[in-house]
Length: 228
Image (cartoon, rainbow, N blue to C red; front, side, top):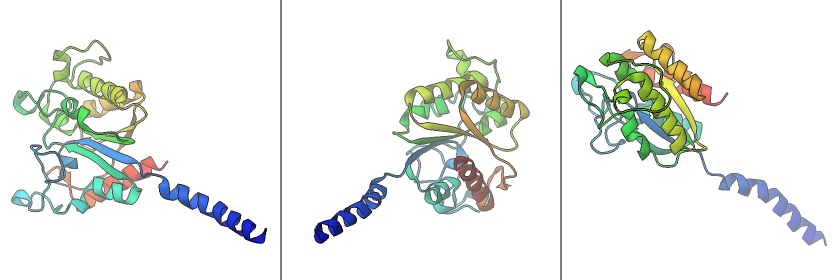
């Protein structure tokens, strides 16, 4: 009897440990622009701002471990799913100089993110920089013409994200130094569609992009938000 009781105690003690060991880490996918790129860690053909050898010394970030998303995944206890980021990409189909960016837009790349538990969307910066059309707040009956305007394109993006990834926590990351109308539009649309968003603040940058210090600041602010 004593031996049986001892074995039962061991089993009871082992069950919580086995459960903890068998619990999978949450998978994080990222849909982004240059801020979330690093050469060799994004889909082939996607333009990258960050690499091991920076072009014209435009950044001090030269190691993937210095990126905000690598640090967040490492420190937050996550697993990387897909990082589909593309330097210069816009949420809408309107790119720089009025060019058609539908081939690289956030909307076009949305279906390629695997099966994440958490989806981080970090965009709007290039839409702010291009000066493309803002459009009206539209939430259904989207036409192709709507997708060349920021507000309808963002509403379509977030609606499609909710439809394609049911059960996935979706968080939109709002950059600093955007045009006021871009920031206000993001907040309005996220609120309307009940999508979480985190407002970044005081990010250190070089050539308009996060430096090593800025990457750490982004990571810290997003992790702090996610742990609330």
